[in-house]
Length: 119
Image 1 (tube, rainbow, N blue to C red):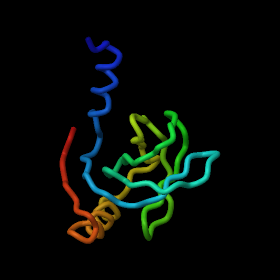
Image 2 (tube, helix red, strand yellow):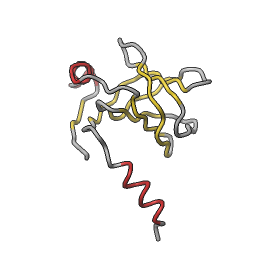
Image 3 (tube, rainbow, N blue to C red):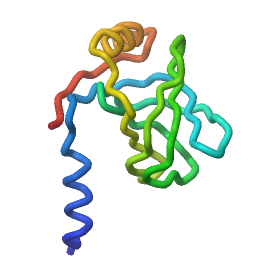
Image 4 (cartoon, one colour):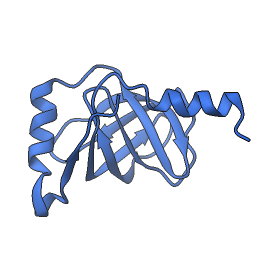
């Protein structure tokens, strides 16, 4: 039987303020007090991202995501589960920046983009 708290946590993960796009972008992630490490961004939206992280990350840790060719983007870790971390950007990305990132990683060279709206 699933606990009420666990059910709420799962439901909260699906309550997004912006549509997410599934993607695979090799990037770097740095958490406050640690060195940057290589990661892969698995989904991206105006409001945040999820990425691989073998080491456990704690909610509310400040982080910086560096996508290829861009300056670091500051955010906060929201969750970590089985080597995947989710984070919210401190400031929303502009639609133009998001579209530029996605267009650079579309197609067979970039690994492909699957757009979805999970609200």
